[in-house]
Amino acid sequence: MSAKTVTGQDGRTVLIIQDKGAQLPATFALMATRAARKVCIRISGGCKGMNADDKKAMMDFFQIAFKGFEGMIWSGGTRQFDKDGNLDPMVTDVPGVVAAGNPKCVALGSTPRTDVLRLVEESRLVLDDYGTAPNPSMNAILLVQDGAEGKLGWDGDLDAAFGLMDQLTQYGGFHRAGVIAWNGGAITRDEVMRSIKKGWPTIVVKGSGRAADEIAAELVAGTFADKRENLYVVDKSSPHILRKLLIAERFIQE
Amino acid sequence: MSHIIPSLFVKNQGDRSVKIALRLTTARNRVVVRLTGGCGYMSAEDARDFLSLFADAFAGFAGAMLFGGTRMIQKQDVSQIVPGITEIPSHIRDVCPNMVSLGVVPRTSEIKITEHGLVVSESDADTYRTIIHPNQDMCLLVQVSPDQPAIWDAEFEECLQITKDLREFAEFKSLLIVYNGGGVTEREILATAKRGWPVLLIRRSGRKADEYASNNAFLEAHPNVRVAEKDSRDIRQHLISFGMLPPE
Image (cartoon, rainbow over all chains, first blue to last red; front, side, top):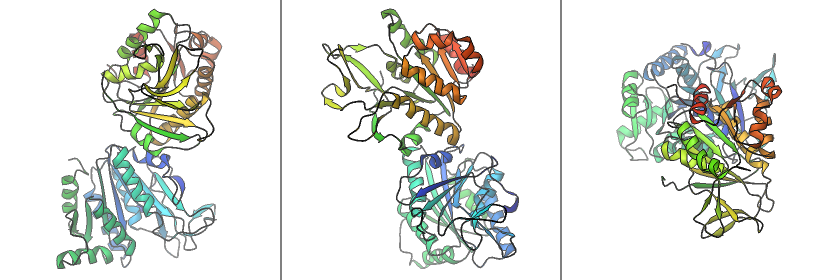
Protein backbone atom coordinates (compact mmCIF):
# COMPACT_ATOMS: atom_id res chain seq x y z
CA MET A 1 0.00 0.00 0.00
CA SER A 2 1.55 3.32 -0.98
CA ALA A 3 0.46 6.72 0.20
CA LYS A 4 -0.32 7.70 -3.35
CA THR A 5 -3.12 5.21 -3.83
CA VAL A 6 -4.92 6.02 -0.59
CA THR A 7 -8.08 8.07 -0.31
CA GLY A 8 -10.44 8.48 2.63
CA GLN A 9 -12.33 5.24 3.37
CA ASP A 10 -15.71 6.73 2.63
CA GLY A 11 -14.53 8.62 -0.43
CA ARG A 12 -14.40 12.04 1.15
CA THR A 13 -12.48 13.95 3.78
CA VAL A 14 -14.46 16.14 6.15
CA LEU A 15 -12.72 19.44 6.94
CA ILE A 16 -13.75 21.00 10.25
CA ILE A 17 -12.41 24.39 11.32
CA GLN A 18 -11.89 25.37 14.95
CA ASP A 19 -10.70 28.63 16.42
CA LYS A 20 -7.75 28.16 18.76
CA GLY A 21 -9.04 28.36 22.31
CA ALA A 22 -12.61 27.58 21.27
CA GLN A 23 -14.28 24.36 22.30
CA LEU A 24 -13.34 21.24 20.39
CA PRO A 25 -16.00 20.63 17.71
CA ALA A 26 -18.30 17.79 18.75
CA THR A 27 -18.62 16.77 15.12
CA PHE A 28 -14.89 16.07 14.82
CA ALA A 29 -14.83 14.15 18.10
CA LEU A 30 -17.76 12.06 16.87
CA MET A 31 -15.76 11.09 13.77
CA ALA A 32 -13.25 9.36 16.06
CA THR A 33 -15.99 7.24 17.59
CA ARG A 34 -16.58 5.51 14.26
CA ALA A 35 -13.61 3.30 15.02
CA ALA A 36 -14.59 -0.24 15.90
CA ARG A 37 -12.35 -0.25 18.99
CA LYS A 38 -12.11 2.62 21.41
CA VAL A 39 -8.40 3.28 21.32
CA CYS A 40 -6.57 6.22 19.76
CA ILE A 41 -2.96 6.74 18.82
CA ARG A 42 -1.21 9.73 17.34
CA ILE A 43 1.73 9.41 14.98
CA SER A 44 3.99 12.39 15.55
CA GLY A 45 7.08 13.42 13.70
CA GLY A 46 8.47 14.22 10.31
CA CYS A 47 10.58 12.94 7.48
CA LYS A 48 13.49 15.33 7.34
CA GLY A 49 16.59 13.68 5.93
CA MET A 50 14.70 10.67 4.61
CA ASN A 51 15.01 9.56 1.00
CA ALA A 52 12.34 7.77 -1.04
CA ASP A 53 13.50 4.32 0.11
CA ASP A 54 13.41 5.43 3.74
CA LYS A 55 9.86 6.64 3.28
CA LYS A 56 8.74 3.40 1.70
CA ALA A 57 10.37 1.54 4.59
CA MET A 58 8.50 3.80 7.02
CA MET A 59 5.15 2.90 5.43
CA ASP A 60 6.04 -0.80 5.52
CA PHE A 61 7.07 -0.47 9.16
CA PHE A 62 3.73 0.98 10.24
CA GLN A 63 1.65 -1.34 8.06
CA ILE A 64 3.26 -4.40 9.65
CA ALA A 65 2.99 -2.99 13.16
CA PHE A 66 -0.64 -1.90 12.81
CA LYS A 67 -2.06 -4.95 11.05
CA GLY A 68 -5.49 -5.60 12.55
CA PHE A 69 -5.73 -2.16 14.17
CA GLU A 70 -9.37 -1.12 14.65
CA GLY A 71 -9.03 2.12 16.59
CA MET A 72 -8.49 5.75 15.67
CA ILE A 73 -5.08 6.61 14.24
CA TRP A 74 -4.10 10.17 13.50
CA SER A 75 -1.31 12.62 12.84
CA GLY A 76 -0.82 16.02 11.34
CA GLY A 77 -3.34 16.54 8.59
CA THR A 78 -1.18 17.67 5.69
CA ARG A 79 0.14 16.17 2.48
CA GLN A 80 3.37 17.30 0.80
CA PHE A 81 4.31 17.51 -2.84
CA ASP A 82 7.74 17.91 -4.44
CA LYS A 83 8.65 20.79 -6.74
CA ASP A 84 7.28 18.85 -9.71
CA GLY A 85 3.94 18.36 -8.02
CA ASN A 86 4.47 14.69 -7.22
CA LEU A 87 3.29 13.33 -3.91
CA ASP A 88 6.09 13.24 -1.35
CA PRO A 89 5.01 10.72 1.32
CA MET A 90 5.36 11.89 4.91
CA VAL A 91 4.47 10.71 8.40
CA THR A 92 1.12 12.37 7.83
CA ASP A 93 0.36 9.73 5.19
CA VAL A 94 0.78 6.90 7.69
CA PRO A 95 -2.77 7.04 9.19
CA GLY A 96 -4.38 6.86 5.74
CA VAL A 97 -2.19 3.96 4.70
CA VAL A 98 -2.93 2.09 7.95
CA ALA A 99 -6.67 2.78 7.57
CA ALA A 100 -6.66 1.58 3.97
CA GLY A 101 -5.37 -1.79 5.14
CA ASN A 102 -7.59 -1.93 8.20
CA PRO A 103 -11.10 -0.86 7.27
CA LYS A 104 -12.46 -0.89 10.81
CA CYS A 105 -10.11 1.86 11.91
CA VAL A 106 -10.52 5.59 11.43
CA ALA A 107 -7.83 7.97 10.16
CA LEU A 108 -7.97 11.59 11.28
CA GLY A 109 -5.64 14.55 11.11
CA SER A 110 -5.16 17.95 12.68
CA THR A 111 -3.28 20.90 11.35
CA PRO A 112 -2.86 24.56 12.23
CA ARG A 113 -3.75 27.19 9.66
CA THR A 114 -0.32 28.75 9.24
CA ASP A 115 -1.23 30.93 6.29
CA VAL A 116 -4.18 32.12 4.22
CA LEU A 117 -6.01 29.21 2.60
CA ARG A 118 -5.95 29.34 -1.18
CA LEU A 119 -7.26 27.54 -4.21
CA VAL A 120 -4.78 26.74 -6.98
CA GLU A 121 -5.02 25.06 -10.38
CA GLU A 122 -8.44 23.49 -10.80
CA SER A 123 -9.79 24.50 -7.41
CA ARG A 124 -7.24 22.51 -5.36
CA LEU A 125 -7.09 23.69 -1.75
CA VAL A 126 -3.61 24.38 -0.39
CA LEU A 127 -2.53 25.65 3.00
CA ASP A 128 0.56 27.68 2.10
CA ASP A 129 2.87 28.86 -0.67
CA TYR A 130 4.72 25.54 -0.64
CA GLY A 131 1.67 23.67 -1.91
CA THR A 132 1.03 21.87 1.38
CA ALA A 133 -2.47 20.42 1.09
CA PRO A 134 -5.03 18.82 3.40
CA ASN A 135 -4.37 15.08 3.37
CA PRO A 136 -7.23 13.39 1.49
CA SER A 137 -6.44 9.94 2.87
CA MET A 138 -8.10 10.82 6.16
CA ASN A 139 -11.74 10.61 7.19
CA ALA A 140 -11.60 14.08 8.68
CA ILE A 141 -9.16 16.90 9.37
CA LEU A 142 -9.38 19.46 12.14
CA LEU A 143 -8.03 22.79 10.93
CA VAL A 144 -7.15 25.05 13.88
CA GLN A 145 -6.98 28.76 13.18
CA ASP A 146 -6.32 31.93 15.13
CA GLY A 147 -9.45 33.72 14.03
CA ALA A 148 -10.25 34.51 10.43
CA GLU A 149 -7.10 36.52 9.83
CA GLY A 150 -4.50 35.19 12.27
CA LYS A 151 -1.73 32.72 11.49
CA LEU A 152 -0.52 29.97 13.80
CA GLY A 153 2.82 28.21 14.09
CA TRP A 154 3.03 24.52 13.22
CA ASP A 155 2.37 23.60 16.84
CA GLY A 156 -0.87 25.61 16.84
CA ASP A 157 -3.03 22.48 16.77
CA LEU A 158 -1.39 20.60 19.64
CA ASP A 159 -3.72 21.80 22.40
CA ALA A 160 -6.70 20.77 20.30
CA ALA A 161 -5.08 17.46 19.39
CA PHE A 162 -4.31 16.46 22.95
CA GLY A 163 -7.65 17.90 24.04
CA LEU A 164 -9.41 15.51 21.70
CA MET A 165 -7.59 12.49 23.09
CA ASP A 166 -8.37 13.71 26.62
CA GLN A 167 -12.07 14.03 25.79
CA LEU A 168 -12.18 10.65 24.08
CA THR A 169 -10.70 8.94 27.12
CA GLN A 170 -12.70 10.91 29.69
CA TYR A 171 -16.12 10.94 28.03
CA GLY A 172 -16.06 8.76 24.92
CA GLY A 173 -15.23 5.43 26.52
CA PHE A 174 -11.81 5.23 24.85
CA HIS A 175 -9.67 3.06 27.08
CA ARG A 176 -6.29 3.80 25.52
CA ALA A 177 -4.52 6.83 24.06
CA GLY A 178 -0.90 7.06 23.02
CA VAL A 179 1.75 8.69 20.84
CA ILE A 180 4.39 7.24 18.51
CA ALA A 181 7.23 9.52 17.48
CA TRP A 182 9.05 9.03 14.21
CA ASN A 183 11.90 11.40 13.40
CA GLY A 184 10.58 14.95 14.01
CA GLY A 185 11.87 18.09 15.67
CA ALA A 186 10.94 20.36 18.56
CA ILE A 187 7.19 19.92 18.08
CA THR A 188 7.55 16.16 18.14
CA ARG A 189 9.52 16.37 21.36
CA ASP A 190 6.73 18.53 22.78
CA GLU A 191 4.17 15.88 21.80
CA VAL A 192 6.28 13.15 23.41
CA MET A 193 6.55 15.13 26.64
CA ARG A 194 2.82 15.89 26.71
CA SER A 195 2.00 12.22 26.19
CA ILE A 196 4.42 11.03 28.87
CA LYS A 197 2.98 13.50 31.38
CA LYS A 198 -0.51 12.21 30.71
CA GLY A 199 0.70 8.71 31.49
CA TRP A 200 -0.06 7.43 28.01
CA PRO A 201 2.08 4.79 26.35
CA THR A 202 4.63 6.81 24.36
CA ILE A 203 6.88 5.16 21.83
CA VAL A 204 9.88 6.61 20.00
CA VAL A 205 11.21 4.84 16.95
CA LYS A 206 14.99 4.61 17.15
CA GLY A 207 16.73 5.01 13.82
CA SER A 208 13.95 7.15 12.34
CA GLY A 209 16.06 10.29 12.82
CA ARG A 210 16.26 13.54 14.73
CA ALA A 211 14.04 14.02 17.82
CA ALA A 212 13.09 10.35 18.10
CA ASP A 213 16.75 9.32 17.94
CA GLU A 214 17.79 12.03 20.36
CA ILE A 215 15.20 10.95 22.92
CA ALA A 216 16.22 7.31 22.52
CA ALA A 217 19.87 8.27 23.07
CA GLU A 218 19.00 10.39 26.12
CA LEU A 219 17.17 7.45 27.61
CA VAL A 220 20.22 5.22 27.20
CA ALA A 221 22.46 7.90 28.65
CA GLY A 222 20.08 8.54 31.53
CA THR A 223 19.79 12.21 30.64
CA PHE A 224 16.19 12.26 29.46
CA ALA A 225 14.17 14.90 31.30
CA ASP A 226 11.35 12.63 32.47
CA LYS A 227 11.81 9.43 34.47
CA ARG A 228 8.32 8.03 34.08
CA GLU A 229 8.12 4.49 32.79
CA ASN A 230 5.55 4.92 30.03
CA LEU A 231 8.17 5.78 27.41
CA TYR A 232 9.29 2.95 25.12
CA VAL A 233 11.91 2.70 22.40
CA VAL A 234 11.60 0.40 19.41
CA ASP A 235 14.01 0.13 16.53
CA LYS A 236 12.85 1.00 13.04
CA SER A 237 14.12 -2.35 11.84
CA SER A 238 11.71 -4.15 14.20
CA PRO A 239 8.08 -3.44 13.29
CA HIS A 240 7.11 -6.71 14.96
CA ILE A 241 8.44 -5.39 18.27
CA LEU A 242 6.21 -2.33 17.91
CA ARG A 243 3.34 -4.62 17.07
CA LYS A 244 3.93 -6.70 20.22
CA LEU A 245 4.05 -3.50 22.24
CA LEU A 246 0.77 -2.28 20.73
CA ILE A 247 -0.82 -5.62 21.59
CA ALA A 248 0.60 -5.58 25.11
CA GLU A 249 -0.71 -2.05 25.62
CA ARG A 250 -4.13 -3.14 24.25
CA PHE A 251 -4.11 -0.89 21.19
CA ILE A 252 -4.45 -3.98 19.03
CA GLN A 253 -6.50 -7.02 19.93
CA GLU A 254 -4.95 -10.18 18.62
CA MET B 1 -35.03 0.98 40.34
CA SER B 2 -31.36 1.37 39.51
CA HIS B 3 -29.62 4.30 41.15
CA ILE B 4 -28.06 6.71 38.69
CA ILE B 5 -26.61 10.06 39.60
CA PRO B 6 -27.24 12.16 36.50
CA SER B 7 -24.75 14.69 35.20
CA LEU B 8 -26.38 18.07 34.63
CA PHE B 9 -25.22 20.21 31.72
CA VAL B 10 -26.45 23.71 30.88
CA LYS B 11 -26.04 25.20 27.45
CA ASN B 12 -27.14 28.15 25.41
CA GLN B 13 -29.05 27.42 22.23
CA GLY B 14 -26.67 27.10 19.30
CA ASP B 15 -23.80 25.73 21.39
CA ARG B 16 -22.68 22.12 21.04
CA SER B 17 -21.46 19.86 23.83
CA VAL B 18 -18.64 17.51 22.95
CA LYS B 19 -18.93 15.79 26.31
CA ILE B 20 -22.58 14.91 25.81
CA ALA B 21 -21.97 13.80 22.23
CA LEU B 22 -19.14 11.53 23.29
CA ARG B 23 -21.00 10.08 26.26
CA LEU B 24 -23.91 9.15 24.00
CA THR B 25 -21.46 7.14 21.91
CA THR B 26 -20.59 5.01 24.91
CA ALA B 27 -23.86 3.15 24.38
CA ARG B 28 -22.99 -0.34 23.24
CA ASN B 29 -24.93 -0.08 19.98
CA ARG B 30 -24.72 2.76 17.47
CA VAL B 31 -28.41 3.66 17.54
CA VAL B 32 -30.35 6.55 19.03
CA VAL B 33 -34.04 6.58 19.91
CA ARG B 34 -35.82 9.85 20.52
CA LEU B 35 -39.00 9.38 22.53
CA THR B 36 -41.48 12.20 22.25
CA GLY B 37 -45.13 12.98 22.88
CA GLY B 38 -47.20 13.39 25.97
CA CYS B 39 -49.99 11.98 28.03
CA GLY B 40 -52.81 14.42 27.39
CA TYR B 41 -56.34 13.02 27.84
CA MET B 42 -54.88 9.66 28.75
CA SER B 43 -56.94 7.35 30.93
CA ALA B 44 -55.58 6.21 34.28
CA GLU B 45 -55.40 2.67 32.92
CA ASP B 46 -53.38 3.74 29.90
CA ALA B 47 -51.05 5.75 32.07
CA ARG B 48 -50.40 2.66 34.19
CA ASP B 49 -49.81 0.35 31.26
CA PHE B 50 -47.54 2.29 28.99
CA LEU B 51 -44.51 1.87 31.22
CA SER B 52 -44.53 -1.90 30.86
CA LEU B 53 -45.55 -1.52 27.21
CA PHE B 54 -42.23 0.16 26.43
CA ALA B 55 -40.09 -1.71 28.97
CA ASP B 56 -41.17 -5.00 27.35
CA ALA B 57 -40.71 -3.70 23.82
CA PHE B 58 -37.22 -2.36 24.52
CA ALA B 59 -35.82 -5.37 26.41
CA GLY B 60 -32.15 -5.69 25.42
CA PHE B 61 -31.87 -2.15 24.08
CA ALA B 62 -28.28 -0.91 24.15
CA GLY B 63 -28.40 2.39 22.30
CA ALA B 64 -28.76 6.03 23.25
CA MET B 65 -32.15 7.49 24.19
CA LEU B 66 -33.22 11.13 24.12
CA PHE B 67 -36.30 12.25 26.00
CA GLY B 68 -37.87 15.13 27.87
CA GLY B 69 -35.82 14.74 31.04
CA THR B 70 -38.48 15.84 33.54
CA ARG B 71 -40.73 14.28 36.15
CA MET B 72 -44.04 15.58 37.47
CA ILE B 73 -44.68 15.25 41.19
CA GLN B 74 -47.83 16.09 43.13
CA LYS B 75 -47.61 19.24 45.21
CA GLN B 76 -49.67 17.78 48.02
CA ASP B 77 -47.67 14.58 48.22
CA VAL B 78 -44.29 14.83 46.52
CA SER B 79 -43.82 11.07 46.70
CA GLN B 80 -46.63 10.73 44.17
CA ILE B 81 -45.34 10.72 40.61
CA VAL B 82 -47.70 11.87 37.88
CA PRO B 83 -47.53 9.28 35.07
CA GLY B 84 -45.95 10.77 31.99
CA ILE B 85 -43.98 9.77 28.92
CA THR B 86 -40.77 10.99 30.55
CA GLU B 87 -41.04 8.11 33.03
CA ILE B 88 -40.50 5.58 30.27
CA PRO B 89 -36.70 5.85 29.76
CA SER B 90 -35.87 5.20 33.41
CA HIS B 91 -38.08 2.08 33.33
CA ILE B 92 -36.31 0.88 30.20
CA ARG B 93 -32.95 1.79 31.71
CA ASP B 94 -33.69 -0.47 34.68
CA VAL B 95 -33.68 -3.51 32.41
CA CYS B 96 -31.19 -2.21 29.82
CA PRO B 97 -27.92 -1.37 31.59
CA ASN B 98 -25.99 -0.87 28.34
CA MET B 99 -28.10 2.03 27.11
CA VAL B 100 -27.37 5.71 27.75
CA SER B 101 -30.20 8.16 28.46
CA LEU B 102 -30.11 11.90 27.95
CA GLY B 103 -32.93 14.15 29.08
CA VAL B 104 -33.22 17.45 27.25
CA VAL B 105 -35.07 20.16 29.15
CA PRO B 106 -35.73 23.67 27.89
CA ARG B 107 -35.28 26.21 30.68
CA THR B 108 -38.58 27.95 30.19
CA SER B 109 -38.48 29.78 33.51
CA GLU B 110 -36.13 30.25 36.46
CA ILE B 111 -34.92 27.02 38.00
CA LYS B 112 -35.85 26.61 41.67
CA ILE B 113 -33.66 24.56 43.96
CA THR B 114 -35.91 22.68 46.39
CA GLU B 115 -35.59 19.76 48.75
CA HIS B 116 -37.58 17.73 46.22
CA GLY B 117 -35.30 18.44 43.30
CA LEU B 118 -34.65 21.13 40.73
CA VAL B 119 -38.04 22.57 39.81
CA VAL B 120 -38.17 23.60 36.16
CA SER B 121 -41.85 24.43 35.89
CA GLU B 122 -44.61 25.21 38.35
CA SER B 123 -47.96 26.89 38.04
CA ASP B 124 -50.57 27.80 40.65
CA ALA B 125 -53.18 26.30 38.36
CA ASP B 126 -51.56 22.86 38.41
CA THR B 127 -51.65 20.30 41.17
CA TYR B 128 -48.16 19.15 40.26
CA ARG B 129 -44.73 20.65 39.78
CA THR B 130 -42.16 19.59 37.21
CA ILE B 131 -38.65 18.66 38.32
CA ILE B 132 -35.52 17.36 36.62
CA HIS B 133 -35.94 13.59 36.43
CA PRO B 134 -33.58 11.99 38.95
CA ASN B 135 -33.11 8.77 36.95
CA GLN B 136 -31.20 9.50 33.78
CA ASP B 137 -27.54 9.31 32.80
CA MET B 138 -27.32 12.95 31.73
CA CYS B 139 -29.61 15.94 31.63
CA LEU B 140 -29.12 18.91 29.35
CA LEU B 141 -30.78 22.20 30.26
CA VAL B 142 -31.18 24.44 27.23
CA GLN B 143 -31.60 28.20 27.47
CA VAL B 144 -31.20 31.15 25.15
CA SER B 145 -28.92 32.85 27.69
CA PRO B 146 -28.74 33.07 31.50
CA ASP B 147 -31.24 35.94 31.39
CA GLN B 148 -33.43 34.65 28.60
CA PRO B 149 -35.35 31.39 28.86
CA ALA B 150 -36.05 29.06 25.99
CA ILE B 151 -39.41 27.97 24.58
CA TRP B 152 -40.63 24.38 24.73
CA ASP B 153 -39.68 23.79 21.08
CA ALA B 154 -36.04 24.00 22.14
CA GLU B 155 -36.28 20.41 23.39
CA PHE B 156 -37.00 18.85 20.04
CA GLU B 157 -34.76 21.27 18.17
CA GLU B 158 -31.86 20.27 20.40
CA CYS B 159 -32.69 16.59 19.95
CA LEU B 160 -32.79 17.04 16.18
CA GLN B 161 -29.32 18.60 16.28
CA ILE B 162 -27.88 15.86 18.48
CA THR B 163 -29.45 13.20 16.27
CA LYS B 164 -28.14 14.88 13.13
CA ASP B 165 -24.60 14.94 14.54
CA LEU B 166 -24.78 11.31 15.62
CA ARG B 167 -26.15 10.22 12.25
CA GLU B 168 -23.80 12.28 10.11
CA PHE B 169 -20.55 12.04 12.03
CA ALA B 170 -20.79 8.92 14.21
CA GLU B 171 -22.74 6.62 11.86
CA PHE B 172 -25.68 6.16 14.20
CA LYS B 173 -29.11 5.00 13.08
CA SER B 174 -31.99 6.94 14.57
CA LEU B 175 -35.67 6.48 15.32
CA LEU B 176 -38.26 8.98 16.55
CA ILE B 177 -41.04 7.28 18.53
CA VAL B 178 -44.20 9.32 18.97
CA TYR B 179 -46.72 8.57 21.69
CA ASN B 180 -49.69 10.91 22.00
CA GLY B 181 -48.47 14.54 22.01
CA GLY B 182 -49.73 17.98 21.01
CA GLY B 183 -48.54 20.94 18.98
CA VAL B 184 -44.83 20.75 19.80
CA THR B 185 -44.89 17.03 19.07
CA GLU B 186 -46.54 17.73 15.73
CA ARG B 187 -43.72 20.07 14.76
CA GLU B 188 -41.19 17.38 15.68
CA ILE B 189 -43.03 14.75 13.63
CA LEU B 190 -43.06 17.02 10.60
CA ALA B 191 -39.44 18.14 10.98
CA THR B 192 -38.20 14.56 11.34
CA ALA B 193 -40.38 13.13 8.57
CA LYS B 194 -39.21 15.88 6.23
CA ARG B 195 -35.57 14.92 6.81
CA GLY B 196 -36.35 11.35 5.80
CA TRP B 197 -35.34 9.95 9.16
CA PRO B 198 -37.28 6.98 10.57
CA VAL B 199 -40.41 7.75 12.60
CA LEU B 200 -42.66 5.31 14.47
CA LEU B 201 -46.14 6.50 15.45
CA ILE B 202 -47.97 4.56 18.16
CA ARG B 203 -51.60 4.09 17.10
CA ARG B 204 -54.27 4.64 19.78
CA SER B 205 -51.82 6.52 22.03
CA GLY B 206 -53.85 9.69 21.50
CA ARG B 207 -53.79 13.13 19.90
CA LYS B 208 -51.08 13.88 17.28
CA ALA B 209 -49.68 10.36 17.12
CA ASP B 210 -53.16 9.08 16.27
CA GLU B 211 -53.88 11.92 13.91
CA TYR B 212 -50.82 11.25 11.76
CA ALA B 213 -51.13 7.47 12.11
CA SER B 214 -54.48 7.71 10.34
CA ASN B 215 -53.37 10.30 7.79
CA ASN B 216 -52.85 8.12 4.72
CA ALA B 217 -51.71 10.98 2.51
CA PHE B 218 -49.00 11.85 5.02
CA LEU B 219 -47.89 8.23 5.38
CA GLU B 220 -47.77 7.72 1.60
CA ALA B 221 -45.71 10.87 1.18
CA HIS B 222 -43.30 9.78 3.92
CA PRO B 223 -42.33 6.12 3.60
CA ASN B 224 -39.87 6.67 6.45
CA VAL B 225 -42.86 7.00 8.81
CA ARG B 226 -44.43 3.77 10.06
CA VAL B 227 -47.22 2.96 12.48
CA ALA B 228 -47.12 0.46 15.34
CA GLU B 229 -50.04 -0.82 17.35
CA LYS B 230 -50.05 -0.05 21.05
CA ASP B 231 -48.69 -3.49 21.74
CA SER B 232 -45.23 -4.31 23.07
CA ARG B 233 -44.66 -7.14 20.57
CA ASP B 234 -45.59 -4.97 17.61
CA ILE B 235 -43.43 -2.09 18.84
CA ARG B 236 -40.58 -4.53 19.38
CA GLN B 237 -40.88 -5.88 15.84
CA HIS B 238 -40.68 -2.36 14.50
CA LEU B 239 -37.65 -1.63 16.67
CA ILE B 240 -35.97 -4.68 15.18
CA SER B 241 -36.92 -3.74 11.62
CA PHE B 242 -35.53 -0.23 12.14
CA GLY B 243 -32.28 -1.73 13.45
CA MET B 244 -32.75 -0.37 16.98
CA LEU B 245 -32.64 -3.92 18.39
CA PRO B 246 -30.76 -6.92 17.01
CA PRO B 247 -32.84 -9.55 15.20
CA GLU B 248 -34.33 -12.23 17.43
